[in-house]
Image (cartoon, rainbow, N blue to C red; front, side):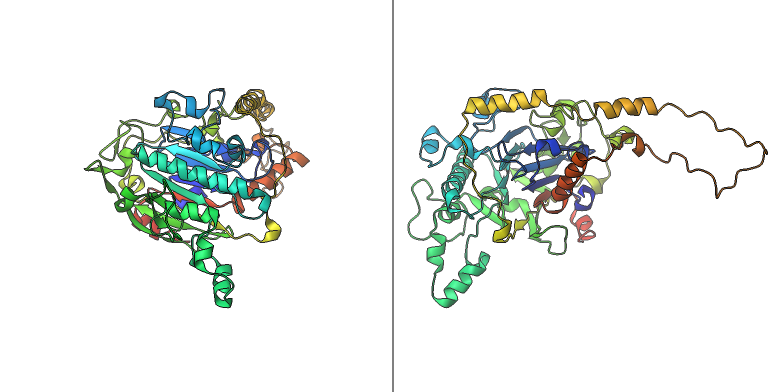
Length: 464
């Protein structure tokens, strides 16, 4: 899939898998790192993951959630209380948190946000709550309000921001068939439509979006530009994009892909720089040329490869793949065209998954402790398999010649071992079948965003 997309950053929303369903081919993707946010309480629900291609881009910080109240793996210190050089920043203030009608600690418990910081910008991959149940109105309003606060705070710090994902918000008439029909019948108006609480907050965030009446205090100016519905970036990144459009011919999901392409050279702080230089830690690229290879020390604490079940392990492909040389072909490294693709879901009411289940709001310490304990106590599913693989991989004795001394009939000869797959393929059980079904859902139904570093000519040849 990643090869087909020719991507360098891929964001999935609504993964709908549990941690126990994670498999090697989801986490140990050769040449890629990944960052998951899975729901704390509801199982098989929501979920966001961002994949990054190690060859072309490497984040310098990674966080889960919007509020900063969650904790990094194996830590009881929340993201917002880490040292300044370890946090992304821009967290909603305690005053902003106190104004919510819902416990802010609960907002980050459903696996709805992963944030990566690159030297050039902060990327927010989102799965925003949908408007399907009145009992969820406060939750949805609180999430969008904190999203607005976090983005504005980051921009105020001088950081560039990209916001994208499954936002579940129709900004105007063009996005809603119901509104068009209501206007035609005279039972509704666009002014009423854009004045709904969630839509009003969101539209004040985006340049050019319609806002009814005077703007709210603290939201006097928009801070995001709509590159292509919905790929949003800071206003000072307008000149970074060379193209944006939909890819209606790309099938495999019930969501329409959207892409946007970065220019090869962009202006940062008044200087023209190669985009590769600023989507990697300092010193990795200089003038678009790699100076240092990606290594394990570049992995962040939130990396999926550091989950106890998968750390210290490699995929079969990794074992037989040569390490890339320091010089790369120009076509494969032309990061100047970054593509972001988002799928906006179209779901029937019968497919709604946002129904609320009441539960006691956990405290921040409980969240952190629960998270750390689950990581420490997780069992590795591959131990028995790897031991069996070492035992069975001993060389087989040479076959005996037939008594007649003649050649065996090729039509009756027994087919020998053709690959190593049999050594690592577990027996089919009900649990494995359930995991397989979850994986298929992850592949087919999940909305996605991707950013690629291929040149425009390369992309044109893979439009299907």
